[in-house]
Length: 247
Ligand code: CA
Image 1: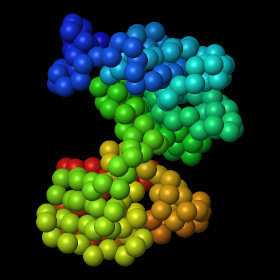
Image 2: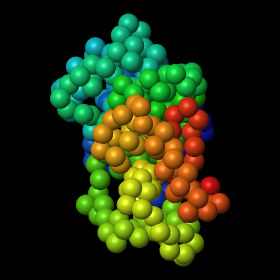
Image 3: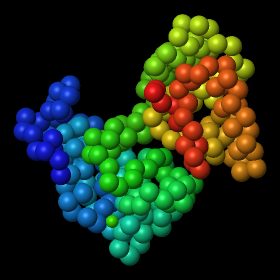
Image 4: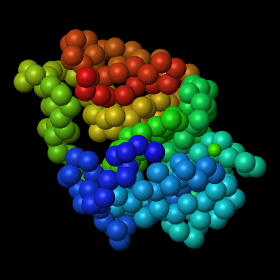
């Protein structure tokens, strides 16, 4: 637990947002068997205005999804008994698609990829900074619950993407993209900071799921990068996919 976590006053170190003890941002269900981690995560999320419901194993967590109606689930993969992958499968077998972030103890690509393929929206690797975790929770919620102003222009560093006008500029210079390239870039920027798998990108931008054609994504990413130039804010995440991120 870092010293920053102990500050009184109910404000983030940055001091922008006051804590909301009423949990006005909704409920996050935390499924985690390690109490110190659960306490730390709870403290940070409550500080950000979430109500946190904590369960220590898969079956209790799944039961709480039904009773607590969480806005998001934060799931540890390494749980006693039913592990996080099984919990993810069970969650995704249901009709409702609750936003899900998995927490992996090991920085193993296979865990991350399997988790995302099973339907997790994002992952965090232990040890993580609680502030990063809180930021990812908010990023996933932004993505799955788009704001009413979804057509407003988006900025990322020197890049501006305007979905309403379908215009892109880089450092003020207009960039001509094909319709597909535009949709791809807009999807990445709308989900900035999140790692997106090629399958997720295919499904969102091309409108179907095809394991055979994930190379199409690579080809289009290359074209978009070439048009945006050296400062293109698109990061390759090896073995997983891509993320829009300012340098
Ligand atoms: Ca664990």
